[in-house]
Length: 470
Image 1 (tube, rainbow, N blue to C red):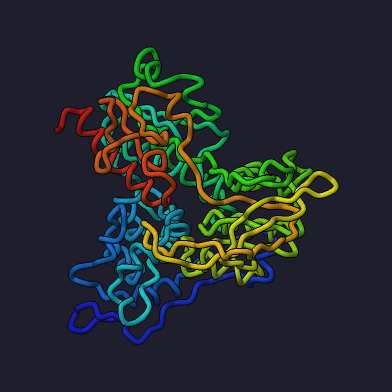
Image 2 (cartoon, rainbow, N blue to C red; image 1 turned 90 degrees about the horizontal axis):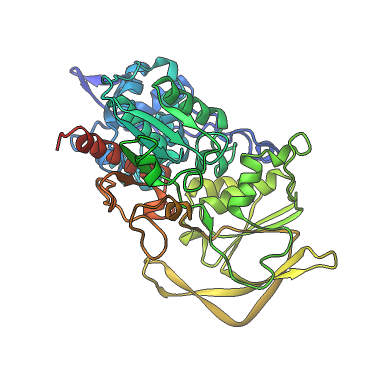
């Protein structure tokens, strides 16, 4: 570790350590992880680039306020267990966040070193530690307080809240609609970005802390809030059902065979192993010419999945340009390296029906950028008479999601007109004093780390309220 007179001095000449990626041509043929992660030497070298700022902006950029300089210093000292313990004081899911968080917009986006050069690879360093869970100390558990909490949904917000509550002495039961835990982490994010074994390891860690999981349990159907708080004997509920209802394009031909919503397409492959049909009995269409509409991370996941399923031409079509795409820049870079074609400034008008009754193409409207809209991005404007037909045998819509309707079925809370739960941003409190909520069912589709932050805040507030510490 570089020091002068016993004080830390960053290696200012060292370039950012390059990601340890699999060759693009090889990885695009299967579902192996794109990034192998840092080796020990790579991690130490990158940690030595940290400037140890007196006012670390990176911490301010982290939604769960991890003490980033402290864990990086431990990496530089090769005290990896201590570094992991520092992260786990704030985040239960470092191996996941290190892989899927948009660090370029959060911690790394605030890194002071990034002003004049490249920021420290904070995400890679977090993942490096997260992938060594055996080095972590056992979490400190408070004595049981005899109170029971139901957590509905085992996505990032739900499992973060469950872990925090368990550490605070609550008996926690997580109800999950699917047959396995992880929520969007397992059904939405492909294996090549987030291996399912990593998610399972985190779920198993929660089980070791005493958290109970009830799978195949669709709350709202099996029991509503009144039953959970009544005959089921729970003292409080945390609702984290997500926002997985797809948005419709509302154009002709949207119901044709082989026109998919991204959530459906990804769930078939990620969760139900359609890529291994007939070994697993969930089929899906392995298209040769695939077009995906959208510009976010879900669209990137879908088009890169299609490439791995044998697409000879895989297109991501977006109504703005690459510069306006909300997807992580790293995901766009990976997609293009794997042979994905980006088609900017087009919007779908109609899916076309082939002689066999399946989709055979799509008519698109060419666009140009006009004045900025409420998001600050330039608004796409149709170019009169500029229409094109693109052949395809699979089309995927990835333009966003709406609120999961099970929040309404669970009941007992005030919802807004779009079906999202109304909850306080800082505490997660809803209109019902015994129900808290967080994650995408409150905010709409957002990032894993923001959902985790909501779960953490809610757990802290639930602990205060339920144990009379306010």
